[in-house]
Length: 454
Image 1 (cartoon, helix red, strand yellow):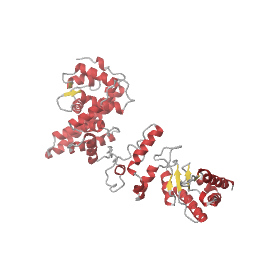
Image 2 (tube, rainbow, N blue to C red):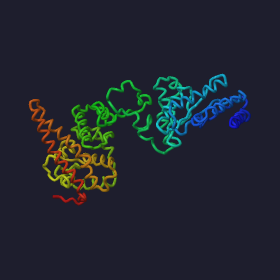
Image 3 (cartoon, rainbow, N blue to C red):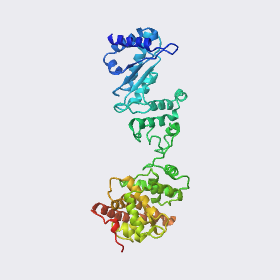
Image 4 (tube, rainbow, N blue to C red):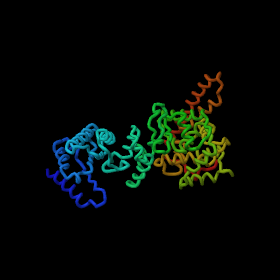
């Protein structure tokens, strides 16, 4: 009773001191902050309060009620019943529907969004929250998520009242303002990866398209289950329209599968990552691809050190002949210049097939390694070794198989060709394993700056 009287006094005070002549009446809201635990413990006390505040002069009645669950621990079915009961109590006491009942649910156990939707289904008229999920504790159900859910479930009124295509940008902006950081990439709806095209299974046909709804880019995600269409799409997104050969794209998929079986994880989403995957699968980098990849190469002290050594030995065009490149950069790990494994590595590097390795052809592999494994090297020498181990070795086997298929395509030779491919690939695997082991057992490599000319 004392709490009810306090609320009535406050409502009357608002009307007496905040109302202005010629202006709309003040809109007072009462927050039932502890509605969930209170109604669970003693529903009659909550009912007395809700009906008690209606005894005030009709002009001083609250514009509406708001509620919240700070713990995020109640089930949607529970929150729905609480809302339904409050709505019924109000109607019985006031003789009319509660026109404004807003809900606010904190995150806690993964049910916040579902609780909001259930509250709305049971009669709540709106939400009070931020456009993004940032908030006290671990955050709360956001208006971006609720409005998007209503829109995708067929509520056309939210499309009429709100400029929904800007919800995503607004949520990102508010997150940056409040936290000083970008949203987590996996944040639903407005994270960097939220609108990605992930699977091409055909089962999501007709489903809600986040990228179309928010008018944002739909990046194609590359992974072990990516389809040929997805690889084509990502190549186009990164490098523009071009007739990417289907056989190369298929080889890219085989390379992804092989690396998955070998437990190798590669970054293939960035222009640098998918460009090198395309190259390793037998593709030739066209001008637009080279221009894009050149922009990815960052100049820093280690890259400058490697390039300085390179320039001391390069020809007038800035390239190293295969033998020179082998002597100065590969011989510490590849023990035989004429072996299959060395020849394949040089082929993977040699994009324009001129029997030399240009600075760009090697630098893009160095940059991919530097970006992908920043904590695994401390010197230029270690970066070079890691580039062979993490970047080139995993791609070389697929390139060998692709090359042999190119050499042996006649149908009548397929059976024998297949056996030859298997034998050579197995031999290659043994050689690669030995080289990979050398990276593990080598304690100290010869510094680049003092590798002698033979």
